[in-house]
Amino acid sequence: MAMDGGATRDFQVGALGALGGAQGRGPLIDPFGRTISYLRVSVTDRCDFRCVYCMSENMTFLPKADLLTLEELDRLCSAFIARGVRKLRLTGGEPLVRRGIMTLFASLSRHLDTGHLDELTLTTNGSQLAKYADDLKAHGVKRVNLSLDTLDAEKFRAITRWGSLPQILAGIDAAQAAGLKIKINAVVLKGVNEDELARLVEWAHGRGMDVTLIEVMPLGEIGAGRLEQYLPLSLVRARLSERLTLEDLDYRTGGPARYVRVAETGGRLGFITPLTHNFCESCNRVRVTCTGTLYMCLGQEDAADLRQPLRASEADDLLHAAIEQAISRKPKGHDFIIDRRHQRPVLARHMSVTGG
Ligand code: SAM
Ligand code: SF4
Image (cartoon, rainbow, N blue to C red; front, side, top):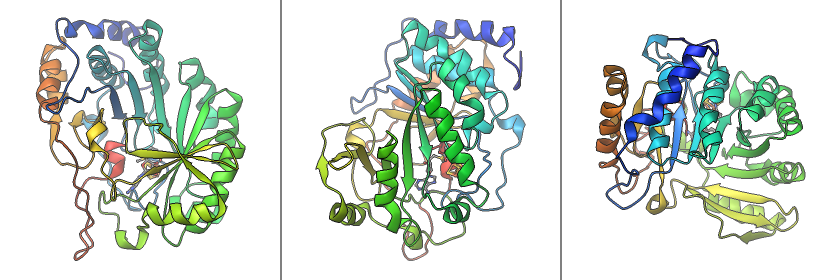
């Protein structure tokens, strides 16, 4: 079997049969009647940035041998698609730094062709977009979520530690030239970018990009106190409405975001407030890490290992059984709280593990 690096014939052919093991098995419905139609897969825990809210400067990454191969990732995604997942998002770490990642996009695009999948997309920091925009478009990707917290080059460097703003802006240019639609995700950081959010929204809307503002989530030990970074979006929204007219929208994605239309720009603005709002009742998603661990809820520790059943047999029966078992344990909701006394995250894993 081919490993990372080349779109070999073996990979393409081997992956084609992967819808097989689902025969006679229905869609994935959890104990609360929610149908699982959205899968996020972290394809690597590595990243070329070290964003202050996401990673510490000295991260220890997983040994490469622990990672699912691109073929295994394809099998896993295909198994979920066979069970009714209609939207697939690749994330990370930084998905575009995984070697050979275009072969996975190429291979997964067959599910778009057959109509089993509605959307193949990714969340990226944009550093490799100039290189890959055309390929992504060719593999059926239509929209990209791009994380960008500031338009100030110095602040950008301070937030990402290793990133360069001009490189990201070039990536955005390339993606738009290739015909990809971009949504900007910005994490709101107290005292860092709070004063430029209106400008960021106006800039993005001016370029035809929607924006989602995200509250810092208490995931992973990152060295700095979470309370110093945390700014409730209710406050941000109130401040934004002093400058912009925000009109509530009914638009929902099944996810944690709530949307408004900005009257002045005509663009859409989302707010993801995991700490202050409950969005769990409409949750249609699950996440898989690059080692094949399935998290049924972003805010809970419970998880299921899919790598073992994936590797135990070439057929997918064991995998399907493990997925079903896990979905039967999907919890009703999450429980994020910042431990104010100890300034510790309530969940030890980093966002780069589950991919946000
Ligand atoms: N590297 C890619 C990127 O930055 O878009 C994909 C992975 S990144 C973990 C996915 C999203 O999670 C990014 O939008 C990032 O800003 C967000 N994120 C990371 N850590 C976070 C945290 N502690 N709280 C809120 N959002 C976070
Ligand atoms: Fe990398 Fe994305 Fe985490 Fe930043 S948020 S360190 S770009 S994985």
